[in-house]
Picture (cartoon, rainbow, N blue to C red):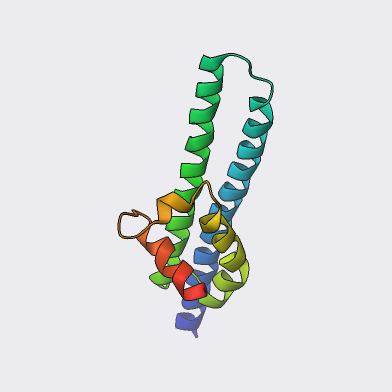
Length: 122
């Protein structure tokens, strides 16, 4: 019985970690939208370049967050059914977005776990 409880607690903890990463991805989306809005009002080249660099940083953070999630999925650290239900479509949309697509081109991509999961869900 205690082994069952320990296993259940482990799955709960792992899924809570996945939820926390998902929260961070959501926060990044908000930062991206906010940065996009601000870029319309920038009329200085240096300011625009700073905003662009910040925007790219937010996208890179999101790519890294997805890679962490997909690593957990492949390694069995996240409940597979839960993960698929929660992330299948958002992962697909994120990878297929024109802004991110170039970062997921094989064989040069560094996001190998994300690509593996993406192919599995296709």
